[in-house]
Length: 90
Image (cartoon, rainbow, N blue to C red; front, side):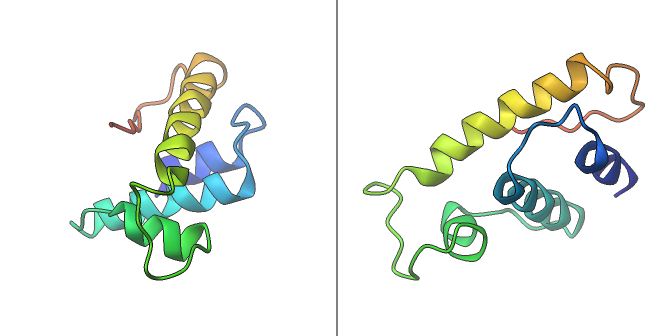
């Protein structure tokens, strides 16, 4: 959680508030040994209606790609010497 806090507090992590919640959800689930579903993110983070269909609404895929780029920006700048590197895989 310390690494997550370091990223979220950094001015070199240009993510929107919504994508910060997205990253936090994924990290918390991962630490608890749970996989994060697109449906969970869409409904609980992005406020989409519960019968969410990721084939019709690509919001999670689009924001995942943004989040990967935002993490790359962080690790390229102030996070380049961090002892732990969070990765956000496809």
